[in-house]
Length: 135
Ligand SMILES: [Zn+2]
Image (cartoon, rainbow, N blue to C red; front, side, top):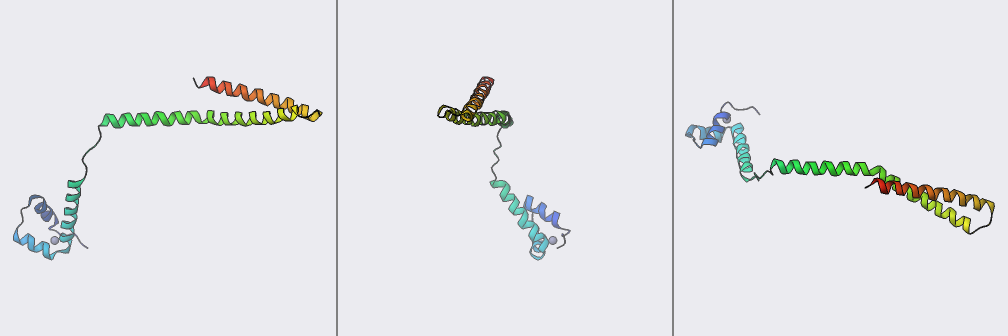
């Protein structure tokens, strides 16, 4: 489809409402102008029904700042969360080892108990370190 030479004239008539009989006859006969008129009418109606409410710039900026702060806090807390989980796993392993040590008299169990005590001490120290660093 080619663009009609009278399209700008037609769009001006749509905006102003000043139609000549000759332009109306051209609109009825020209496919390009008919499509342009339908498109212009659609855009005009869409613009009339669109919600013109835009939030104040200060509110948008404030929300963006809050979001950035929340995201950076989450990113900063991620390694701490991983360390806490690792400390919990180490503490659990230490508790299992301590149970083995307390329920048996073998040398291997005593060795496991010593390892368990080291793990428990390490996990407790790690947990305390992270708990104090959060303040
Ligand atoms: Zn035309």
